[in-house]
Picture 1 (tube, rainbow, N blue to C red):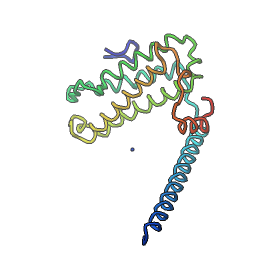
Picture 2: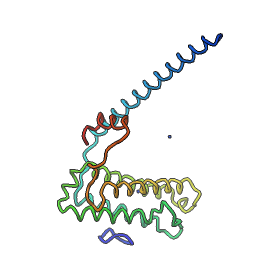
Picture 3: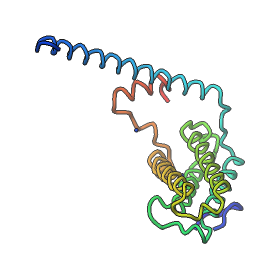
Length: 206
């Protein structure tokens, strides 16, 4: 079912002319304000990214990190397998998503004997860091929800479904960026000009 290591067990006017002039002026003003607003928003986002990247300690991919990731994933699976959880086997099904993520990560590791290559891959490093965070967030949800986790209409179960959806998107992205376990991220390009410009300004050639 799941893992084969020690962690194994079982991711939003007065005249027509005046009216026309007013309308054009208003439209122009709104466009200008909207443009300024978007520009300001992008600047703030860029600043937030830059600050986060400069202040956060670099996440390292090594044997210890790998084993920690396995254990966190395994713990989430065990919590979700509790008989009272009664999680329905329908997408996004976390009891399939995490084992599938584990298997694809194993495939990636098998293609990279030198783990430092994966550590140098910024996308992979960020992926594993986020996977760890989401697993910890799920475990925390169970600790806080306690018996309410067994109630399918509770706030905690809705949050678990949201996290399951996140794990689903993460797995799909991982398989797209690492088809057959080999990195193919450098073959992708952003086709929308505004998004591409934002990416270049924020991250350069990465």
